[in-house]
Amino acid sequence: MSIRILSVGVPDKYLTHLDKKRITVIRDPKHVGDGVDAMIYWFADRQYGHELIDAMGEQLRWVHVPWVGVEQLISERVRAGEVVLTNSRGATGVSVAEYVTGCVLSHAKSLPSHFTNQAARSLTFAPTKEVRGQTALILGLGDIGKHVARNLRHLGMRVRAVTRTASPHWACEEVLSIGHLAIELHSADYVVLCAPSTESTRHLINDATLSHFKAGHV
Image (cartoon, rainbow, N blue to C red; front, side, top):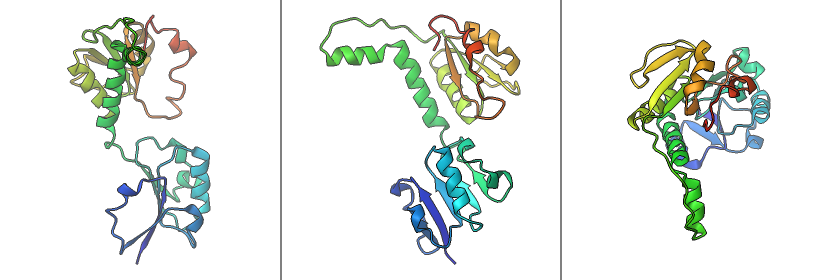
């Protein structure tokens, strides 16, 4: 019996390991025929994802996304338990944390300005500063948040965190509950939003919280 999987936007290099004898990979939703058993969804388009889940019929039982956020695919069928929706929690922590670390250093060292001046053969000086000793506030300490905390701690930064449940973490000098967000924003030099997108976290950063940011806040 062959399992039929619809691949939506997944690069071919990630599909080469599949057992072709037992798994049939379909790359075009128009060619699903009688339906598919599972779907790997690489896009971030919410409406398109919902439409595909509804169009696949009752045979569809499982949808997987190769990242962490799944909010764009929580359709009525998923809410009803007709389709299982899974993510790749734990697979992106290192990569995203490296990206965040790069952004922090790029800002502190004025790298965009340096690159622009270099391309223009300009001798204009772009001021830089050290991140060592500066304060980073992390909102959410899931897999990604913990990797970010570790990286920034190793840079010599003071790392603090605000989470739903304030559990200590070795890379943070203090972890506080979400009720302390406003006061923590006053002293943070960098703020990293690592919280999942849910009803309770949507618009967590808004006009009110932005008003607590200090000058030069990132």
